[in-house]
Length: 169
Picture 1 (tube, helix red, strand yellow):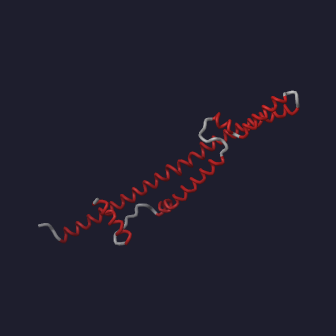
Picture 2: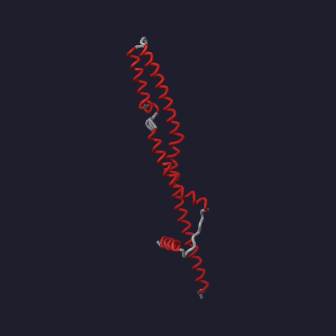
Picture 3: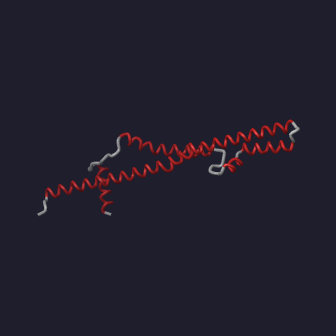
């Protein structure tokens, strides 16, 4: 309780300008700290929008994702249509060829989305939701420790002045 009171008093004195405030961060680090919230906001919104652009179901296994893609559904429809018409008709051959091509396109899209998810989406999430909050938490802890250090310095110098003025007998 006493430590908290001393911390609040020191903070009030620093705010008013009566106490000396120790600066532990360089000017460059202070600029970086100011931009940290902006980086968090941008990475969070980019992650959200990029996730919305992915056509596959995020996090699902490969087969589930593949079956849910519109290209896969179209390919399956074309192949089924080709089977109904038969290989001897021109339309049946065309549908079969187009269905196989659509299936290949769907697989390429799936591989691309998995790569984007692994290389871009997940790192953005980690940055916005894990690393930046951790940096902010450590910064608050550093500010608290600096305040404690300033408070201890003030108390020590106050005690030295008192012992100099009024020595113990």
